[in-house]
Image (tube, rainbow, N blue to C red; front, side, top):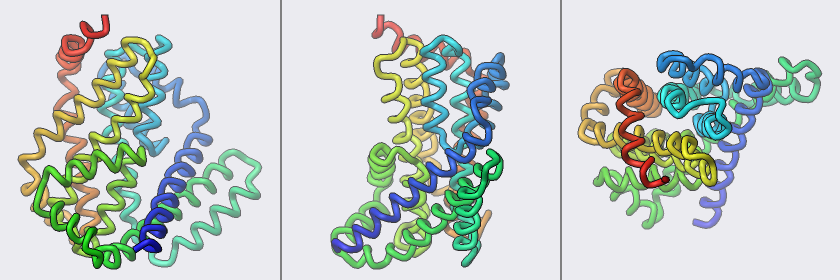
Length: 311
């Protein structure tokens, strides 16, 4: 089992490196305009929502946007109220990554990797370099996804992994905990969802169990914002708490609809990994759009729950 676990760790590292390279490529492309957008286009909840969505779609990391938002709130450039809309938009923007990792380009990952590497090394212009980084990052993600799928069955042949799969398939709570813990450890909900997709594609995880892991990943990803808020201002900490509470409440509401979500996802696509990616989009869109009209109420609730404890 040792060599298989080593390969699994390598594929996970490749996935995270791919995420980092895509994030670096997009950030280099946009420069420091991202921070200016966050500060300028957040006057209303809808503007903050759209800005959070667009910024996360560009950076390909809701965690990075959360850290940026917490930092801007801590320094007074954004208010706590403005950050709520950004959080809601960011949750939707993060689903683009889960859709990207389901791409099936066959053997195209190698030309994509080589072409991207060439652009990185020869690109003197920022646009060329950024496109190269994005291409290499995407190729790494797709390579890691193939690796997860190829390792799923060999890993499942071991009693410990098989027992874990059986328990996860039979218990929503275990799936939820797996998603929370794994995402908190690797600081990437996309990596957790990608691993779940690998087992799902090999029919070792049921779709409802994979959805439970996905929901847990949405809670686990809040750890980055919470860590970033340590030692910051009261409003910055409230921003991190809001991110956590919005995801916890959304997950709690959807726990009762996992089977219905699974049936709907099967109708949307025949591919298991695409089904899970679509569920991620549905969950985050419904939760964020439903919460957006109640930004004032959310602000009041968070202040009631946490502000007094910090005074």
